[in-house]
Length: 127
Image (cartoon, rainbow, N blue to C red; front, top):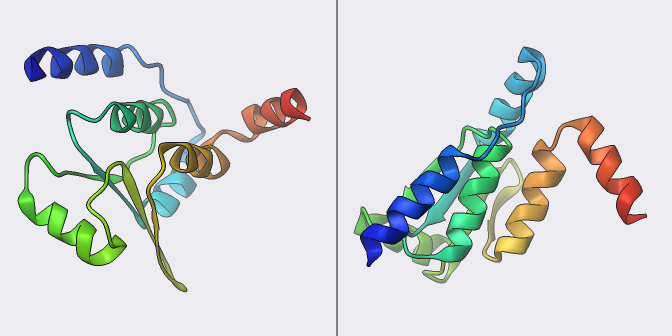
């Protein structure tokens, strides 16, 4: 029933509300996101969670689906050391970082892309 999973995912993503930002803040997000690549698979529930967060945070990043191109799996294996998804590749001037756990990816996304007012609310609630 992979087709049913795809349908349910598509519906849940379409219903996910997106963060609204000023044009200046969105340009900053686009600049930061230009160095990110997300490796996913259609059948991975952790990937679904991460993709929904990307959509919610309105992050225009490159997504490479291993189910659609076998070369992506080779990239992931040679670069990060394992063919596990989800994986976030972070290109920085200091080098490349590969983040594999969905919770770590979610934390990174929140720190980098959550609007400032929302970040303060989250910090108050947890602290």
